[in-house]
Every structure is written in structure tokens, then in C-alpha cells.
Amino acid sequence: MAKFCIKCGAQIKDSDVFCPACGASARQWGTAPGAATPPVNPQQYQAPGPAMPLANAQQYQNPGAGNYPPPGQTYYAPPVQQAPPQQRPVSPPQSTYAYNAYNSAPPVRQQSKTGSKTGLIIAGIGVGVVALIAVIAIALSSGKDKPGANNPGDTTGGSLSNKTLADADLPDVTYSYLTREKSVEVDFTSSDTIYPNLYSTMDSVVNLTATSEGGDTDVLVRVEIPGFTQPYEQKVTLSSQITKLYIKPALLTGYIDLTSSKDAQISITVSDTDTGKIYAQETRKVKLMSVYDFCLWDDEFGAYSDYDLLAWLTPESEGILTLRRTAISWLENYTGGQLNSLPGYQLAFFGEEDYYLNVIYQVIGIQAAMSELGMRYNMGSFSMTEGANQRVLLPDESLSSGSGVCIETALVMASAIQSANMHAMIILPPGHAQVAIEDWNQSGDYWLIETTLLPFYGSDEEISSLITYFDASEWAAYLADPWGDGSGPCFVVDCDMATPLGVTGFSN
Image (cartoon, rainbow, N blue to C red; front, side, top):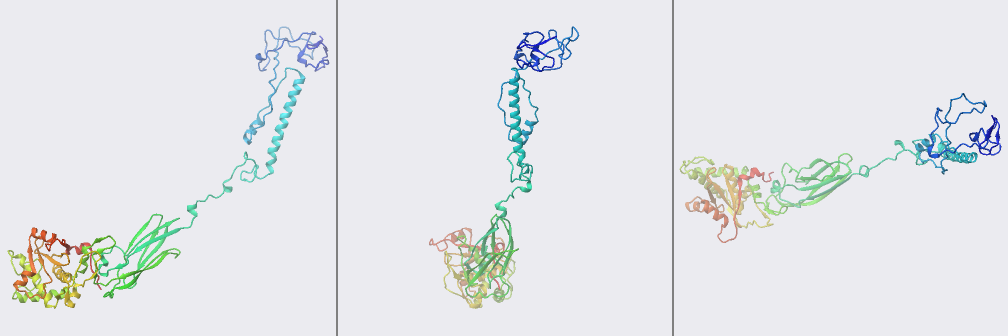
């Protein structure tokens, strides 16, 4: 049966692929001239699939065989797909991963509904897109031989899309607080005046503060007053936290001549224990007062230090032991041999009814011994005012010199009472010094002793002036206003506090 082009009506040979007259494709041919195939609605397009029999489908014709298939058998003829609108080619994304995914997707076949010209145009666009993709691929692949193209550890070249950094090529990270040099700062204050006999009452001679920035530092701190103290050395680990040291070197052993004041120096050194580097080295002047110089005013804390007087108590000194032996001899002679010791708080000469007389007689014996050893009262002044600096002899020096101001005679009496294990107090009215003694162990009764009564021979009149009993109310009134003129109260120093407070005098 002859075939004709449905579009133009020209007869078609079996060997023709396109219509020789209009160029229409074989799918637009028919068995009779002008028998056009009805147009296909694009909205009813179905994806092509395996052929399947349909009730109203067009009968299949084998162009090569020139005959029909067996009657009654029909096949599905797929509708013509309408070509989508032409679109501009899209460049691949700028990343290696996205680019590979784009290239790996299968190309979409586009079909034309307008014939071979549209197909050629679409084919041309496809070729252009492929060419553009090829150019981009060549441009990207051309960097393979450049530094950093495919080498993950190379950061000198390549685009940002394929540039990666290896740990070995990363720059070293440094922290300034780890690399900076250690910095040690040292500051200190020092005493400008030292009273040797009050050295035990001092908290420190040098107050040092130090820090180390940039890491811990081990240092050696050395402080010395040549000719007065032993070298003080201490190893300290400094950190960023403030380190404080309160330094008081130990005194030299052996004899130190401190009979007069003199200038001295405090040597302070702070050095690195590992490298020997000197962080601080300074020598400061200090005034060493004599062993007899005394001052109750504390410049550091701005207060009176009444208990500094305890440093002048010497109950175990050789001069006080001599005084005790002299007092025993005098009492033995005075009592006809009935009292031949300083028994302290013991019933030795008087019984329980007159227990306090045992203490009173010992006080009389000590005062008489001071007189017998040649000690006399010196009418010199004694002041407790702010900044008052005066010379106070130690008991042994007072006894050997044969003279003493009120504070010196009081210190001799108090030292002898303490030596006999009895309880004494130093009473300090304005401009004067006296002693009080408890008449028995923890009795609470005290007698006032006027130690300046020298010479003393033990007459009844002298005894009445030497020692006076006060009850509680009388003591309260006396301590508040001893002279009765409103000049000021008394200071009271408990001699039993010398040991608990650790106030001991300088001793060679």
C-alpha cells in the first residue's frame, strides 16, 4: 500500500526517512493523502512506556514489511511530547562537590513538536551547553598542575572551592602570656630605728612584698644587720599572687657592745635560685640605739606599748641573785635567825592568821638589801609621753652604778619579787613609777611599794612609808587619779605577762 505525507500529501517511498517535499518525519505519514493525525493535547502527555494493547489505538503498521499485523491486535502509539520552553544554560555551582554532581546527572532529552528545525535548534543549544560545560571543566582541571589544586596540604594556590589546610601547614599559635619573659617585682620597707632591748617585741625589721608575672620563680631572700643579727635566708616561690614576708633576723650569739647607740645597715637581697639573677639588692641605714634606750611609743602602730617595760625585768640575772642573797642575810639578822630565806608564798615566819606578813617582810628585806648595796634614788625625770625616748638602766647596771631613777628602782624590786616566784605589777602614775605586790597567791589583795625610799634601814616609820595596803575601792580611786589633781590615770603592767607575751630583754 502506498504511503503519503500527511502534511503535504506527497507520496513516500519505503526507503525515505523524511518527506522529500516538506521534510516531515515519518511519524507524520499516513496511508492516504491528507489523512492528518489529530494533534496531541500537551496537557495529556504520558511518559512513554512498554507497548500495551488499547481499545481505540491506531493500528500498528510495519513500514518495512508493507503489510498489517494480524487482525484484532492493536498497539499503543505514544503521543508527541511538546518541547519545553527554551532556557539559558546555567553555569555549574562553584564547588567541586556540586560540580561533580551536576555533571553526573543524565542529560534531559528534549523533543520538538515543530519538526526538524526546532530539533536542530534544540540540538544546537545542547551542543552549546555541552561546550560551555567542557570549557568550565577544562578551566577547573587546568589547575591540577598548579600548587594547591589537588594537594590537600598545599595552601599556596587553587580556588577557595578546593583549598584545604593540613595541620602541618597551619601557622603556629602562640600566646603572649606563655612566651613573655618572667617579670619579678620586689618592694620592701624597713625599720629606721631599733631598740636592742625591745628587739623581742618587734614584729619585723623588714616587710617585703614580691610578685612574679609570666610564671612562678624560685628566689632566695637574704636579710642581715651586720654586727647585730645573724643572716636571715629563706627560699620562696613567687607567683602572680602577692607574697608577703615579715622578716626579723635572729640576734648574734656572743657579746655585742650596745652600751651606746650607733649607726648600722640593713642588707637586703632577693636573687633567683636557678640563675643567680639579682632582682633586688639594697642597703639601708638603721639607727641601733643602746641596750638602755627605752621608748613606749610605737611608731609603726601609733600606740603605747606599756608592756615593753617587761624587757627590763631580769629575775635570773647575776645582779638580782646577789640582791636576793643580801636580802636573806639582812632578814636573818633582822628576825634573829627566824627568817633565813625568801620563801615566796609560803608560811615561813608567820602563821596562817598573819600569812600576808611573810610577803611584807620579804619586801622589807629586798628594799634594805638595795640600800645596803649602795643604791640611791636619783631624782631624774621619767616620762610616758608620746615619742619620749629615755635611758633606762637594766637592774644589774642600776645596782652596780649605785643610782637609779624611779623606773629603775621599781624594775629592781619587781625583778627580785619575780625571782622569788611572787606576783608583782609595775604601777606608772604620771611622771613616776612604783610597784604593787599581791600578798598571797591569787588572794586579790595588793600592797603599794614606794621603791624610791632610799636609803632604807627598816625603821617602823620607814616601813609605813615603804608599803601601803589598798582595798578594792581605794585601788580604783588611786589608779584613776593617783595625785588627786586630775593629771591622769596610772598605767599598770602585769609582770606575770612577760612569759606569755614573750617579752624578754636583750642578753649577751
